[in-house]
Image 1 (cartoon, rainbow, N blue to C red):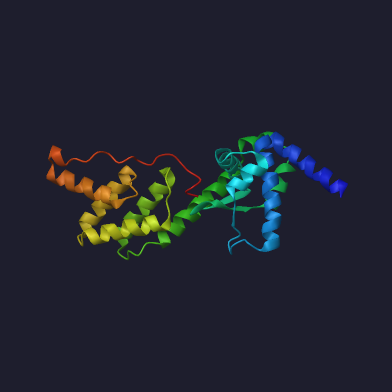
Image 2 (cartoon, one colour):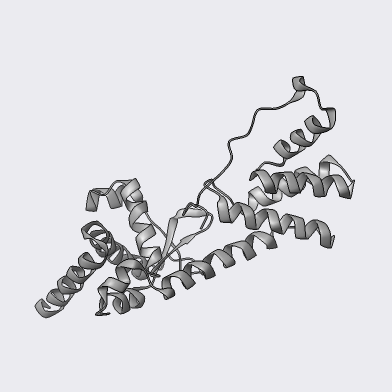
Amino acid sequence: MYLDLFDELRLNKKLVKIAGFEVAAYWAELQSILKQVVKKQTMDERGFFPLDRDFMEKETTLTVAKQLKCDEKLISLGVLLKDPEDPNKLSIAVNGMVAVITDEDTTKLKKGGKTSVDAKAAKIAGIKATMKKALLETDQDLRAAYERWIDGMIDAANCRFTKSVVQVFEQTVTQYTPDKAKRLRIIEIATTNSYKDATWAISRLSSTRQATPATKLPEQKICTGVSNDVF
């Protein structure tokens, strides 16, 4: 028992060197939570479990903002995944962390290696594929336009982007006009301006056609950057 505890502390010390004390403390508590999750079988079929952020803060003193920063670091190490529709649902790879903290090249791990980059790219590709499955459009040109919009939103968004957003966007465009050319133009405007709400693109199209200053709309706040809430 004491030897097991010693090994656990030694591994945490290695993680402190790699990722910092806060990430090590966060990971240790995640391990404790995971034990209960496995015991109570509260994971979903994909291996995700809900994380009570308030409980985590009480146990580690890490604020929600700091927890999210820890998430980013663990994701970069390739040992943590987030549900793309719920940032408080996590999946962790204990074996992956063991591999990380037993690697002697800590400098490489601090900077992030190719494996981490590949894991992130694979995750983003999976999210894009999931979002595209939510589309109902069968016309090849329109579907391709919608998929370009999805790719752009996920690559450059700093807002909550879910399957429901995709469905509402598509429904709004479809109900606005049966004209294929107009639909393509609306999707193009939304893609260019990173609009997740199709009504803004429709309004922009209308104001452009009318070409009167009185009908020109103010700019929508554009989503920029990359957020874990998306992944």
